Each structure stands twice: as C-alpha cells, then as structure tokens.
Image (cartoon, rainbow, N blue to C red; front, side, top):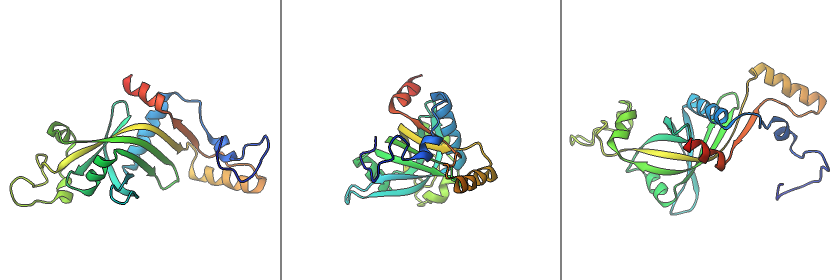
Length: 205
C-alpha cells in the first residue's frame, strides 16, 4: 500500500505496468543468477554513497570485478586513498544501479567493507589498474598488485529489484505501440524483487 496517493482507482491497480510485469514465478536461485548475469554484462554500474560532510548522496561509475557468495557480494577495486573510502567508513550503506542500452535495469542495496588483503587483490588484479593508479616512482606505489593503495570494496547485498526482458527490441516496441492504441499496459519486462530474507538464506546456502 502506497503512503502517497493522488487518486482513487477503486479495485483496479493504480500502477498497472508494475502489476502486469511483476514476476514472482521464479526461485531465489534463478533471480540471483539472472541479476548477476545482467550486472556483469553491464560491467559498469553507478555506486551511490553519502558524503559525510554535507550528507548529500553522490554517485560514481564503478567496474564490477567479481561476484562472490552465491552472487550476493559484488567486488570493486578502489584507491584506498580516494574520498569514497572516507564516505564508506562514515556510512557503509550504498546503492548500485545498472542500466543497459535497451532499458533493462537493476538496483541493489547493500552494505560495504573495504578489504586490503593482498590475496584478495591479487586474485582479481588486472594490469589496467596501473592506468588509474599511476606510478609514483618510489618503487612501492606503482599500480602493481602489491601497491598498498589498491583495495577492494565488497558490497554485501541486502535487497535488490531489477527489470529484464526476454523480448527483442522490436517485440518491445510492438507491445508499447499496442498499448498506445488499446490503453492496455505494456507487458515488456520481468520485474523481480529479492528480499532481505531471500538474500540471507541464499548467502548461507
């Protein structure tokens, strides 16, 4: 039940698009697998954090390094000396947003930890990190896997909502066109939710 309403639609759903496209027919495993596949296909996502000084929400583009713990953890490389690590230390809550060219999207809420264990860094390290870290010329801060500035942000999922489709772009356009003519809501996506309880159970499975 929405706490904000601007009208009364009686017994009919006020948000027919969500009502028609919400998909509750799949298992938690299938939901997490589909989300992981989509997020990794996007490669890049926007990570939203809270600035500790102003309280404002800020977002940054981040590249997924890996998914762990049955797809309930997302890992990202970071420069431990960057401002975002200060923000995460102050408030570990984040949101990850993914979007592709066709309009498929995902929103993942989670909590973070900053890991500096060299075994974790080395497991996923890529030489491309040198382009972002730079070589300070002191034989230590050189952008290599041993550079102490390179850390990993682990996002532990708490909940997620996403919309993906098995229709082609032409099929989706046809469905939208039909809706414009008939007044029926477009049935183009599978909108799925992963609850906190499902995440906990899946993580421990």
